[in-house]
Image (cartoon, rainbow, N blue to C red):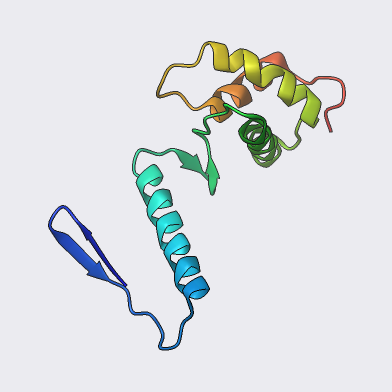
Amino acid sequence: MSFRFCGKEHTVEVADGMDELGRDFLLKMLLNAHSTLVMGRPGRYENNLMTHVSATNFRLIDCAVRYVRLLMDRHHGGAPDHDSVARVLPGQRENLAPDEPIVLKTVEALKKAGPAPGDR
Protein backbone atom coordinates (compact mmCIF):
# COMPACT_ATOMS: atom_id res chain seq x y z
CA MET A 1 0.00 0.00 0.00
CA SER A 2 1.61 3.30 -1.07
CA PHE A 3 0.79 6.89 -0.18
CA ARG A 4 1.87 9.91 -2.22
CA PHE A 5 1.58 13.51 -1.10
CA CYS A 6 3.42 16.65 -2.19
CA GLY A 7 6.11 14.71 -4.00
CA LYS A 8 6.72 12.33 -1.09
CA GLU A 9 5.88 8.64 -1.08
CA HIS A 10 5.63 6.09 1.70
CA THR A 11 4.93 2.38 1.33
CA VAL A 12 3.44 0.16 4.02
CA GLU A 13 3.98 -3.56 3.62
CA VAL A 14 0.73 -5.52 3.55
CA ALA A 15 0.73 -9.20 4.43
CA ASP A 16 0.17 -11.60 1.55
CA GLY A 17 -3.41 -12.74 1.40
CA MET A 18 -4.82 -9.80 3.40
CA ASP A 19 -8.41 -9.34 2.30
CA GLU A 20 -10.05 -6.02 1.42
CA LEU A 21 -11.53 -5.59 4.91
CA GLY A 22 -8.09 -6.06 6.44
CA ARG A 23 -6.56 -3.48 4.09
CA ASP A 24 -9.36 -1.03 4.85
CA PHE A 25 -8.86 -1.57 8.57
CA LEU A 26 -5.11 -1.00 8.19
CA LEU A 27 -5.76 2.20 6.26
CA LYS A 28 -8.13 3.41 9.00
CA MET A 29 -5.52 2.71 11.68
CA LEU A 30 -2.86 4.60 9.69
CA LEU A 31 -5.16 7.57 9.14
CA ASN A 32 -6.10 7.62 12.86
CA ALA A 33 -2.41 7.59 13.82
CA HIS A 34 -1.72 10.38 11.34
CA SER A 35 -4.63 12.44 12.69
CA THR A 36 -3.40 11.98 16.26
CA LEU A 37 0.12 13.08 15.31
CA VAL A 38 -1.16 16.12 13.42
CA MET A 39 -3.34 17.17 16.37
CA GLY A 40 -0.49 16.52 18.82
CA ARG A 41 1.90 18.98 17.20
CA PRO A 42 -0.15 22.04 18.26
CA GLY A 43 -0.99 20.39 21.63
CA ARG A 44 -4.64 19.65 20.97
CA TYR A 45 -4.87 16.63 23.21
CA GLU A 46 -3.97 15.82 26.79
CA ASN A 47 -3.41 12.35 28.19
CA ASN A 48 -4.85 10.75 25.05
CA LEU A 49 -8.01 12.92 25.21
CA MET A 50 -8.82 15.44 22.50
CA THR A 51 -9.24 18.84 24.15
CA HIS A 52 -10.21 20.64 20.92
CA VAL A 53 -13.42 18.71 20.28
CA SER A 54 -15.76 20.62 18.02
CA ALA A 55 -18.91 20.06 20.07
CA THR A 56 -21.41 20.72 17.29
CA ASN A 57 -23.74 17.73 17.60
CA PHE A 58 -25.06 15.50 20.39
CA ARG A 59 -22.39 12.82 19.91
CA LEU A 60 -19.53 15.34 20.06
CA ILE A 61 -21.11 17.23 22.98
CA ASP A 62 -21.37 13.94 24.88
CA CYS A 63 -17.73 13.19 23.99
CA ALA A 64 -16.61 16.61 25.30
CA VAL A 65 -18.63 16.11 28.51
CA ARG A 66 -16.98 12.71 29.09
CA TYR A 67 -13.52 14.18 28.48
CA VAL A 68 -14.20 17.04 30.91
CA ARG A 69 -15.28 14.54 33.55
CA LEU A 70 -12.20 12.36 32.99
CA LEU A 71 -9.83 15.34 33.26
CA MET A 72 -11.60 16.63 36.37
CA ASP A 73 -11.31 13.21 37.98
CA ARG A 74 -7.63 12.80 37.00
CA HIS A 75 -6.48 16.26 38.05
CA HIS A 76 -8.87 17.19 40.84
CA GLY A 77 -9.81 13.89 42.46
CA GLY A 78 -13.45 13.93 41.45
CA ALA A 79 -15.80 14.89 38.68
CA PRO A 80 -19.19 16.57 38.53
CA ASP A 81 -21.99 14.37 37.30
CA HIS A 82 -22.71 14.21 33.57
CA ASP A 83 -25.71 16.55 33.72
CA SER A 84 -23.79 19.25 35.61
CA VAL A 85 -21.04 19.30 32.99
CA ALA A 86 -23.60 19.19 30.17
CA ARG A 87 -25.22 22.35 31.59
CA VAL A 88 -21.91 24.28 31.80
CA LEU A 89 -20.38 23.26 28.45
CA PRO A 90 -22.80 25.09 26.09
CA GLY A 91 -22.19 28.37 27.89
CA GLN A 92 -18.47 27.96 27.37
CA ARG A 93 -18.98 27.32 23.67
CA GLU A 94 -20.70 30.69 23.24
CA ASN A 95 -17.53 32.59 24.23
CA LEU A 96 -14.98 30.24 22.69
CA ALA A 97 -12.20 31.68 20.54
CA PRO A 98 -11.51 29.71 17.32
CA ASP A 99 -8.28 28.19 18.68
CA GLU A 100 -9.50 27.64 22.25
CA PRO A 101 -10.15 24.10 23.57
CA ILE A 102 -13.72 23.75 24.84
CA VAL A 103 -12.82 20.79 27.05
CA LEU A 104 -10.13 22.71 28.96
CA LYS A 105 -12.26 25.87 29.08
CA THR A 106 -15.12 23.88 30.62
CA VAL A 107 -12.75 22.29 33.16
CA GLU A 108 -11.59 25.78 34.18
CA ALA A 109 -15.18 27.04 34.48
CA LEU A 110 -16.10 24.09 36.69
CA LYS A 111 -13.03 24.62 38.89
CA LYS A 112 -13.95 28.29 39.37
CA ALA A 113 -17.56 27.40 40.20
CA GLY A 114 -16.47 24.96 42.91
CA PRO A 115 -18.26 21.77 43.95
CA ALA A 116 -21.81 21.38 42.74
CA PRO A 117 -24.55 19.14 44.07
CA GLY A 118 -24.01 15.67 42.64
CA ASP A 119 -20.20 15.90 42.60
CA ARG A 120 -18.47 12.75 43.68
